[in-house]
Length: 453
Image 1 (spheres, rainbow, N blue to C red):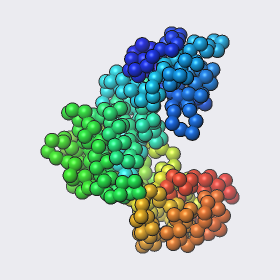
Image 2: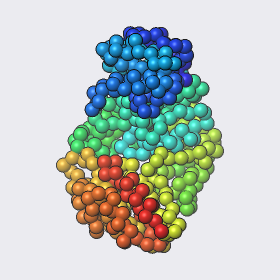
Image 3: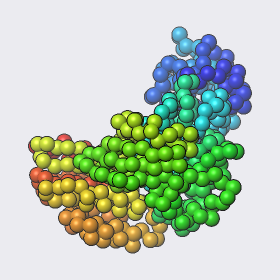
Image 4: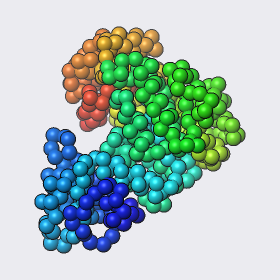
């Protein structure tokens, strides 16, 4: 529940009250009228293909505690009261700005530390691990609620007993991280890495680093940064005035004595506050780096490694990220890592495939990598060369951009790749499924699994 009374809700949003409703307080914010549950506060966002305010009446009918809509729409709803409903109707100039302002008000009311996490790759996994490892009641972004809409919705879904907020922050252009920091006011700002992602929008690695570094300038006074020790592009944005904790080999927080087994990794993680042995439920080397980043975030919040090491069993990744799917009847394993892709994450996933034990062949079902700008063909060729150099036996390309991988087989759509992969795969094979979100490779995974023996 958002423990703010209706008048304070209105004040935070600079809203007029077109209608005073019944007792109680809102449970959480929601922008989809189809997801409304009793007690939700519905925001009728504008600017999309449809005006969200059109669905405010349906939200009220579904049991919304109140609705936030543009002033003209609020006037229409002021007299509406379906039987058994007594909704609050808030009139605002901009429902999105109202959503963001109310999220900031609730963040301040909670008065707990806030962690902001951004980076070219790994931010969702670091968020998932941080939530699991912190020895307090942590509330975190679900899946990829990391935009100017998703982040405030995450804050508004935090229960009053929350002890720390762990928020993922996406970046698609300059100024966007700064906007998210204005909403969240982070106490700890973490950057997982800086790589060639969104080159189409920003042009250079230096511009990407500058956009990511907005999270550092967005820190609250006295806040602490967590940054990779080897991110040269961030160097111009780090100075002696920033209280920074570095992670990775040679950093303040690093892993040693690493032992990888099937499905898990043991590592001694050293920090300025001591060291502890972690038994982590994955074997990917890139996820070990993500775990080290998560431990560094915990240290930045004042938690010792020993307390975090006892909580590794709770690590669970968001859907479509390194999900291992066993198909016993076929004797095939799928590594379903198709949420997104860029040259950094694609290379890491290929390295993991190459290191994965396989009695048969290692196959890559790879989609194109979007938003790479004019260097896209060359970057795709580099990834393909890396895959072949790593010993991947077969590459199946999916989508127009994947032509530049010069794959062994190419198809236009994920569904078409199912037949190709079934024809080429057999017992003991391991198949990596990886590509940009726009390719929709989860359709390949669903189809491949459904066609099992």
